[in-house]
Length: 322
Image 1 (cartoon, rainbow, N blue to C red):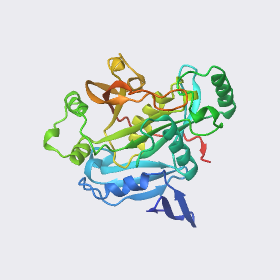
Image 2: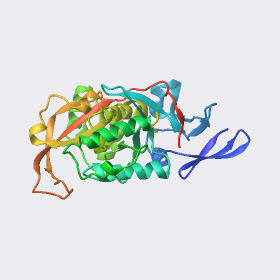
Image 3: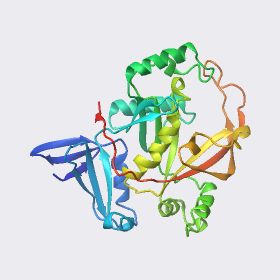
Image 4: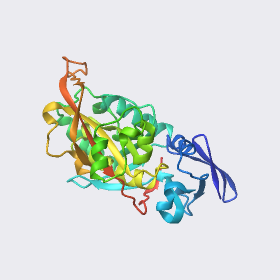
C-alpha cells in the first residue's frame, strides 16, 4: 500500500483500488525541497495508517539518526485533525492544514483582509474554525451588537458561519537574518557561528521554520485563537507533520514602539521565548473606519520570538474533512 507524491496528491494502490489523496497545500513543495538538502536522507516512503485517516511518511539518515532509531517519521493528515477547547470560555475549535481549494481560498481571503502584509507566496497554512456552527452564530451576533472599533470596515463582519476564522502560515525565512537568532543560539547553547553561514545554511543548521503570518478575523479576536494557533504551530504541525523535522519555530512581530516593552503577549503565552533585542521597521499604517490608510502611521519596532518544537505522539483525529 505504498503511495507516491504526484503534484499535490498521493497516488497509488490502496486496498486494491487506485487512490488519489489530496495533500495539505504546500506540503509537496516542502517534501521536494528536502530532496536537495545536505542532510543525507534517502527517498521518502508513504504508507496509509490502517484507519486511512493519515499517511505515515518515513525517511532514513541525516538528522533522523537522533530519533526513531534512524528513521524520521511524520504524519500527513487526511482529516480535520485537532479539536481543542480554547481560552477562558473553553470554546471548542478545530485546527487543520488547508488541504483543498475551498479551505485555501478561505485562508487567503482571511489573510488579505486581516493581515497588513496580505497573502504570502508560500508555506503551509494552519487554519482554525469553530467546531459548533450554532455556537459560532450566537457569538457572531453578540459581537456584532457590541462591535469593537477595531477593524469596523472588515468584510468579516458580514461573513458567513462555518468557515476559516484564524490562520498562521509556516514557511522558512531565507530573505533575512533576524538579530534575535543570535540570542536563540546563546540561550539554547548551540555551537553555531551565524556570521560564518549564509542565510540558507543558517536556517538549515538552526533547524528553524518561520511563522510568516498570524491572523484572526475581527469578530473572533480576544478568544485565545491566536495563542492556540501559535501553540499548534509549535507542537502538532512542527512536531509531527513537517518534513524538515524542525527544532525551533521563529516569529517576527511588528508592534507599536510604545508596546515593544510589554511584559508578555499572546505569543509568549503559547510557549515562545521573546528576544530582548528589537529592530526598527517602517511605521505601522493606520486605517480609518472605511478601511482607508489615514496619516503617516505610528512608530514601530520588530520583536523576535522562538519556541522549541515539542513533538506530540498522536493527534486526536475528530472527523473527515469537508
